Amino acid sequence: MSDSENSSDTPAGKPAPCAGERPDKTFRNPAPFLPVGKYDECNDCSGKVISEFAKSFDKSARRWELIVYPSLFAFIILAMYGFFLIFSLTQDIRIMASSIDPQMGFNMGSLSSNVGMLSNNVELMSTHLEYISDNMETMSVDMQNMADSVETMSSKITTMAGSVGNMEKSIQGMNKSILEMNVTMEEIGRKLNNLTPMAQNLQGITQAVHSMTGAVHAMSYDMNGATRPMSFINRFMPW
Image (cartoon, rainbow, N blue to C red; front, side, top):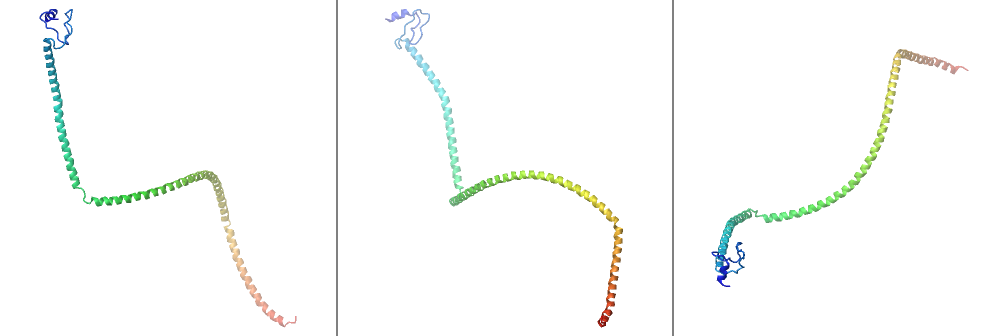
């Protein structure tokens, strides 16, 4: 197929379609697919594609420049800040190392000995705690016995409360009896007050009896004096 025949199939004034382009819909018989680089018009199409690709690559490169350059600048700032932090840390460590007590070794030895003593004291404390736990168990048993005793004592106290109630009733009866006895004693006192003159008369009788007793003693003495001559006469008489 020659070029004249191809030009006769296409309308005048329009170039042949390039590879990959859609044919015009006005044609009833569209042209078949043509390979790239067979006609001169395809060279212009390839140049357009390359120029568009270059433009898109340039745009994408600019976008990456807008992202990469600020990121690189931020990374540089962060690196400088990290270097500053490391430098400050080294300075602080140097100051701390210079301010450490020179007798730290001796103090650490004392600390180790004190820690050993502390461990021994903790062991002793653990043994004492074991003894305390045993004593607490014994105490719990004693407390249980005490609780039982308290329950028994509470029951006895309840019984005692009833007995105290009965005792209170008995005491009330006793108070009544004592009041009655007080009334009786008051009556007896009144009667004894009435016997006061009789007591005075009895006192006079007692004095008279004492006088009579003295007279009887005097009379007996006189009788003894009278019997002495009679006893002397009785010695000489023949009877």
